[in-house]
Image (cartoon, rainbow, N blue to C red):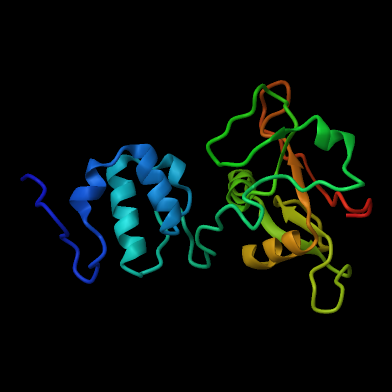
Length: 202
């Protein structure tokens, strides 16, 4: 049976599914991100349409890959994914490829990358089984201490935190996220480093 024109989903007055289905996949991905849908890069056209409708209907499911305590689409962050510069910027920052969108690819295997884009960082960590964490005992009053990811190792000093808390601290400290997608041999890398270009002890 052919799709009915217009909006077939109750309680979603601002969603016109026919209009959505006429859009290109890239446009739908942008629309999905704006609506708060997680992990849009792996979704097909119809899945994108459904995810946008769900997100706009206010049920907060956030798309196919979201979990129960998802923080939704974290977006680019306050700097739009662009790197932060300062007097203590390292040489590795200078030679790293800047990434300002989840759709950008490394220029080559083993390439050093840098970003402040929240969704890029979240996707990178989650693809490797990483959970946002802080090192216990490094807190400053109510503020998180040293930021890390728990990749499932045996480090008892790591305490899991929400993505919202992790990125709040990341942005307050004006950090850059320097990382690799793959090592030069093509295998997935978990290398990352946080740098504050305004001081050395990030």
